[in-house]
Length: 84
Image: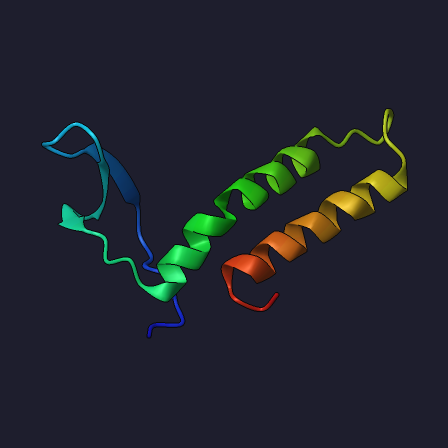
C-alpha cells in the first residue's frame, strides 16, 4: 500500500445517486489508499489544531496554550502520516 497520500487539489463532488460524494483529483476518482484514508481520518484533528494555532493571541493566551496548540498540530500530522 502507498505510504504517501495523493497530492494535488482534492475536489468533493456529489455522486449521481445523491447519497454519496466522490473525491476527485484532476477529474479522476480518488483511490482510497491507506495513506489517503489516514489523511481523511486525521482531517478533524488537523482542522482543530490549525484553528487553535491561528486563534492564538499572545495578548490573550499564555505561552503554554501556544505549546499545547503546536503539540496538537504535530500529533495530528503524525496521525495523518501514520507516525502516531
